Amino acid sequence: MKTKIIQISDINKKLEACVLGYGHFTTIHAGHIRYLNYAKKLGKKLIIALLPDVNRQGAKKYAFTQKERAEALSFLSIANFILMMDDEEFGDVIDLIKPELVVLGKEYENTNDKIIINALEKQISNKSRVEFHAGEIHYASTDLLLNSESDLSKKRKELFLKKCSKENINSKILLEAIESWSETHLLVIGDTIVDQYAACEPLGLSAEAPVVVVKELQKRDFIGGAAIVASHISALGAKCTFLSVTGDDNLSNKIENELTLRGIESNLIKDTSRPTTFKKRYIVENQKLFRVSRLEDHKLDKEKEELVISKLREFAPKVKGIVVSDFVYGVITQNILNELHLLSMKYNLQIFGDLQCSSQIGDITNFKNFSLLCPNEKETRTALKDNESGLEILSQKLIEKTKTKNLIMKLGAEGFIAYEICNNKRVSHVFPALSVNPLDVTGAGDSLLAVMASGLSSNKSIVCTSALACCMSSIAVETMGNSPISKEQLISKILNVFND
Image (cartoon, rainbow, N blue to C red; front, top):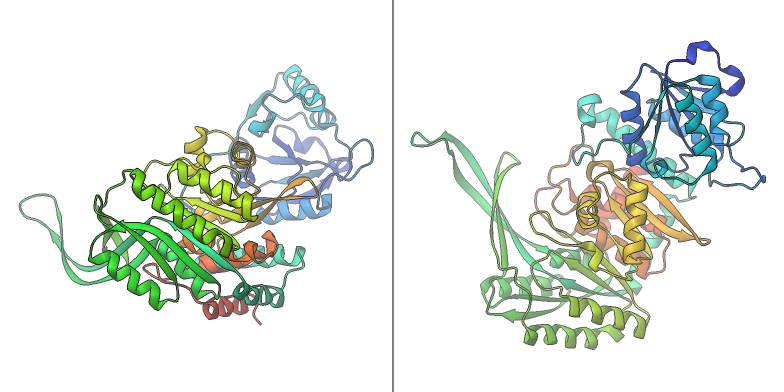
């Protein structure tokens, strides 16, 4: 299907009996695509009424022109027609087209905007329907069912390069940003995990019970959790100090030795009340079967908590930023978060945070006044108890509740959205997932956090750093297990994407 960009003067009766959408679509992201796909399913034709560049007073409202926004919508090939509105009067469009159904985003459901209210009154007076919907929410991608891997890869690369071009970013700028990381020093704090991958041969089903039987062939240990974030930072050229709590066991000793080999100053506080968190994954031909975890997730006792806070006070004057990687296994307590806030104000430190709760219960809204938060959509919806709002509203809710300066909303196979304040306005930047068919997504978020912290603490822009994080996370998912990604690997990826 080829989307047609049309003017008001092009409308004729052939466009009647359709579904009508509406918006400015300044930055198209996964939330918009969900909304458009949902609206498309409700009728034979979908028309998008696209707002003009200026308001009634003649002031420019959007970062991109109406023509640029229309072309971006057309590139998606979801709508049948994109209608270039001459002014903001949505009601005039409804009078002209007489749609069977108007579908608006959830943000318009309780709006006080008189233009929208009057327009919807016209739609109802025509005895036609109105629906408010943010689009169906999915946490897994179905893109490969609709596109070939090569076509999808090409499309995502085009989107990435188009975004970089609009922001005047090229490979030279990205490579220069990487070189600047050697001047920064970060402290990483959080839970330490050892991930073991066991490669197995399938033997079939047990004759005694419906149980899959495998033969373990080989196993390999990887340092995970906050420790891999520290490892990425060090491998990328920045200086890194690591602070964590582990068990008083052999795994802790192995972690300490490995981090030292990676050039990381490690400070592991031993806690006899817990083992070092250990996760074992059984794999058959690169397919994970299941995971077994050995852990204790109770909060630190008062003595251990005071030791951590004492270390934070010792290291804070020496670093440019602190990275909090919380897997909700008890290391990051409320008292520690409070101390981080005090230290950030005292020493003018940036604080970067990520809370991962794939199998645990955590709440990202406990992270207040951070420089950057990097949750995924599911974690955000769980924390805000909101499974209906569109991505824009959801992200704004989290920003308002946490008072974070910047936000990365991770969308899995759909990439991520970066939010920043620019000229007193909240601006979003959309980046696609460059890897189409990932082998192992376990470490994508860790690698992204490492790059964002390295970049922002080096005073690089969020959009430049996000472009680097996009490339970094695509490397992380291409191999099984969580290994440090070097500066050289990232440089090679950038040159490959830009075809330099």
